[in-house]
Length: 121
Image (spheres, rainbow, N blue to C red):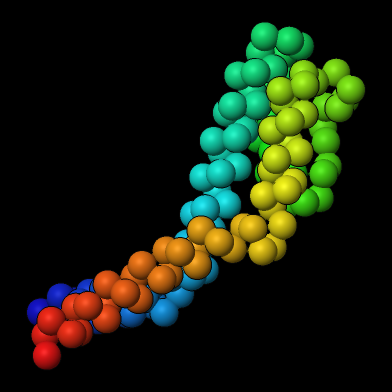
């Protein structure tokens, strides 16, 4: 029974931690998914040209999203479509633009919590 109580305490701690840090969690999820999806698109586009390893495609898109612009492949040899993806990621990776999605998610959860509290009263 002591173990069950400890597990419940841990569960409550994790739930409260996640509520307090939802903004950070939303940022991490947004950046991770966007870099993975864009890396897959980049990789598929480049398979028709000169094959690029998936790791290189993912690295380049993540680097563009983080606005560092590091490349592991000769940039002049990638297609115009892939260059456009990297340019869009650099534009989207700016601090203000990248923060929009997590802010919208946070507003949604705050409104939901307020509506829940209003319905309980």
